[in-house]
Structures are given as structure tokens and as C-alpha cells.
Image (cartoon, rainbow, N blue to C red; front, side, top):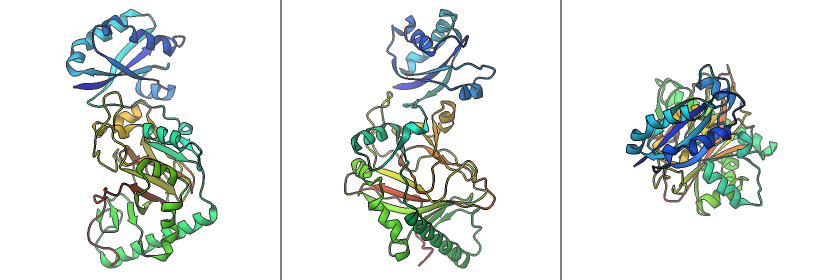
Length: 365
């Protein structure tokens, strides 16, 4: 059995280059006698460095390795002492994270995850998506259609509010948990409301299942016979930050300790905001690459420590596509009177069925 160990090396001066530190630890004699697989390296930013390394203003280096449990317990103290004393360029070294699975150290740059459709090289987009677990679609739905989508979503939300008041007068909407056939909420002013497949007013929403600019990528990921469930997700003022979670379980093989070999996605989610997202209104924050292993569940705080998050702040009519297993969290709606609504398209293989977010009692029938 192997674990991921991430160590942080702190340079003694700003003139010490990151490559010098990386080469130093890779060439350390103590590592030549054991089986250690170095598979990822990344330079921390000044901002993260100041947040997590108190009183140190220079960029540190994070290195991640896959090493056996017994091996690490044997070499940890000797390794750290050896590196500390091997060069005047190192001021300190410490273990910042150990985990029983692959841990991604992905560059969380928004621009590197952006794509526009139609795209002539869909296989390249597919390869990028399978590695990161997320892409941001910068091509925008035209205003005429966007306005229809907004009207349809607002109508559905108004219907739900009215029926909740009539059928469940004792329910504290936004506070109590709700688990109905069409509506789910764990409280905290967040709601997940399915559209009625037979309502003509939501036809424009259902049409996007097959006409959205992202569909060629969905077909490449899931195959041409995919199914889709569509809902409107809305967070009202006062909605707090969510905890880190993944929408779907890991149903097949996880990646190995080096981040390779995981099963293909069985479901992909597409978010289409109906309003421009912002720090005030909130957005969804993602841990890039976290779809590869179920062992990362419970390690959400590490995403921020490793500078591995991306903020899905996109404009109305753009989209965020992510693997259903990717860890993420909805951020707070800090506004005073503005609802944050988005369309959620859950594309999945024919054999998968989403059941955990909804109940059996109908709100509408």
C-alpha cells in the first residue's frame, strides 16, 4: 500500500530558484535506496505562501510523492534532516499533507480551463477534461434564448414556492430540509428543483439537452446514447458556504497513487448560470483533478492549502462542465435581495440513475 506525501521546501532567500530546490530533493542520496515515485511538482504562489507559511515571504516549493507506509515511517526524519542540512538554499522543510490516495497538484488558472464551442479538436478537449475534471465554456447563449430560459426557470420556482406554502404550510422554507419528488433542499436557502418534462413553458430548457454547444463533448465522454436530467439550482440571500463534496460516488476503479487509471465518468454536470456570478452573489468552487479518487473525500481543506481550487465565476449564458465525481462547494450568497439561479444538466450513461437528491412525494401532483 502506498500513500501520497506532500512536502514543502522553503528557500532561504529570494534568489534561490524553484528548480534548484526541486533538483536538490530529487537528487538527495537518501532517496536513491528506496522506491519513491515522484510524479508531480508545482510552485506555490506568494499569496498561498503567505497564508500558510507564517512569516515567510518567498515562494516555497511543494513536491508530492507516492511512497509505501512502512517506507515513509522509516525515512521521514532522516529525509527532512538530510535536506535541511544539504544546502544553504533551504531554510526549512516539512510534511504538509499525507493521504491514502492520489492528491492532485494542478495549476488552478482559470484561463487554462476555458474552452469555446464549437471546437475543431474535440479529442484534445476531451483529454484536457479527463485530466482536470472541469472546463469553463466561454461561448455564450444568445440573449433571446437566455431570456426565455430565465422566464421558464422563474416560473418553475414561483410554482414551487406557491405549492410549498399551500401543501406544506408548517415547513420553514430555506431552513428545513426538503426531500420531494421534484425538489430537494438541505436547508441553508439552497434548492434543487426539477423541471416538468411535460410543461410546454420549459421546452426551451429541455431543448438545450441536445442543442447546447457543449453536447459534442458530452457525446465524446459518455457516448451518443446519454440521458439527461435538468433542474434549476437557486441560492437565495443568506445561503452560506457549502462544505466540500462530490455529487456522485466513485462507482468504479480509482486512479492509482500517481493519478492514472481511473474509470471514465458515468455522469457529467453542466452548470449554466442565469445571472452573472460574482463574489457577492456567489459561485461554485472546484478542486481541479479531485475526480480521480474517492480517497480525497474529507480532504477538501487541502484544496485551498495546495492552491488547487478554481472559482467558477462565469457570466450568464456561459457554462461550467465538470465530472460528477469532482469535489466542489457552493459559495455564499452575500447579496441582500438577489437570487442566484442556474440551470443544471446532469448527463449520464443509460445505466445510471440519480436518486439521492430527491424523495418520492410530489410537490405538484
